Image (cartoon, rainbow, N blue to C red; front, side, top):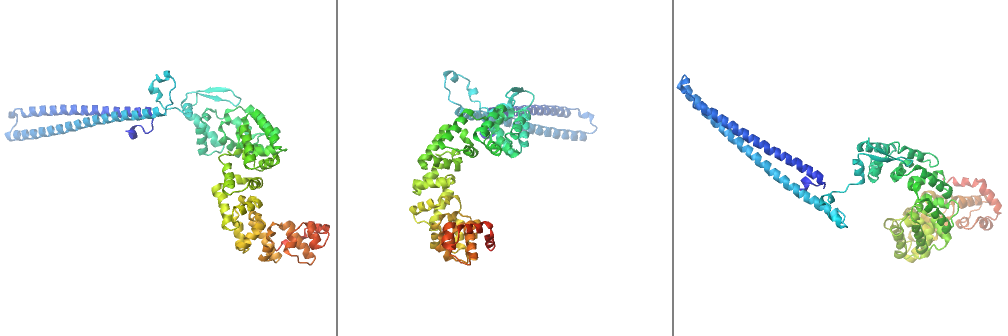
Length: 559
C-alpha cells in the first residue's frame, strides 16, 4: 500500500491519487451496469421477435417445406441470441464485481497510506508546549513542513532587494522565470551547472534577485578598483558566498579601506583574499580593529606581517577573539613557544594555524609526536619553528610512514636516536626522503653502515633535491674531482657544502695553483681559513678570482 500510494510521504499527492483511482473504479462500475442493462434489453427484443416469427401463420408460405426450414432457422437464431446474451450478462457481472473489488482495495490502501503518513508526521512534528496548542487541529499539525525555497518558488509575488538597500515587490515574473534568470546569470559567470544547483539549493533567496538590476552592480564592484578581481576570482567569490547579494554595496567600501590602509594588503593580495573569503566585505569593523590591535600587541608584529597573516588566514577577522586567545595559549603550552619572538616566528611562518580547529586536527599531530614517539618538548618546538607544516600532515598517511622508513633503513635504532635525528633534521617530514635514500643506495652504492654514517653526519641530506643537489655534487666528486665512494665516507658531511659557492670555486682556484687539495680541504672552513691553511694566499686574491667567474669553466664537465 505504501509503495502504491505514499512512498513520497505527501498526503495531498496520496489523496489525489486515491481520488483518481476511486473515480476510475466508479466509472467502471457504471459502465458495467449499462452494458448489463443493454444486454438484457437486446435479449428481450430478440426473444420477442423470434416468438412473433415462430407464431406467424404458416399459410403465407407457398410450401410447407420452406416454412419448416424457416422455422428451423428461426429457432437456431433464437438459441444463439440467448447464448450470446447469457455470455454478455456473465461478462458484465464479472466486470462489475471486479470494479467493486478494486474500489474496495483502493479504499483500504488509501486509509492505510494516510495512517502511515500521519504516523511519520506525528513523529517529526515538534513537541507542543502549551495547552492551547494541544487543542489545534491535528490535521494542520501533521502537514509536512515547507522549506524556504518552496515558499519562494510558490509565492505569487517576490520582494527583491536593490543594491542600495531599497526593496521592491515583483508580481509579474513566475517562479520558473525567476529560476531561469538566476541560472542564466550564474552560468554567465562561468559556474558549472552543478555549482549553480548547489548555490540555489543552499541559498534559495537567490530567487528574490532581479536579474540583472540586482546583480550586475555587485559584479561591477568586484571587478573595478580597488578590488580589481578577475573573472576567476569573481566566480570563486560568488560560489563561496552567494549571500553577497543580500548586503548593501556602500558598506563594502569601509571594509576594503580597512584591509588596505590598516592591514596593509596590496592590490593583488586584496583580490585574492576577498575571493577566498568574501565575508570580509561585511565583517564587524569594530571587532576587526580590536583583533588587529590585539595581534600587533601580543606578537609584536612588524609592518606587513599582519597582512601576511590575513592573506593566508582571513578567518582571524571573522572568528571570535576568544578563539585567537585560545590558539595562542595552546602554542605556549603544547609547543613550548613561551617567548614572544618564538610566537611571532611561528605565526608568520605558519599563519594558517588560525584557520585550524586545534582540538580536532593539530592536537592529534602533537599527541603523536609527544606520546607515541616520546619526543621531548624541545624537539617538538624545533620542529614547529623549522618546519611548521608538519602540524598539518596526516598522522596515518605521512608522519607514521616516514618514521617507519627511518627504522626500516636502520638510520635510527630507538626513539632516543630518533629524537636526536629529528632535532638535526626537523624538515624530514616535509619531503619524501625515500627517493634520496634510494639514490644513495643505488647510484652512490652506499651500504647500510655507510648510509647511516653519511646521513647521521648531515641529516638534511634527506631533504636535498636529487636532481638539483645530490646528483650534481656526486658528478663533481666522481668526474671533476676524481673522487670515490670512500672519499665521501671519510667526509660524510660533503653534501652540506654548496656546489656553486664552495666546491667549484675552491677547486678551480687550487687548479690555478697547480695543487690538488684533499676533499676535506675544500669542504671545511670559511674562505679565510681556506686561504690561510690550504691555498696560502690572501683572501682578496681568492675573492677576486671568485667574482670574475672564471671558475665556471670547471663546471662544464658537470653540466
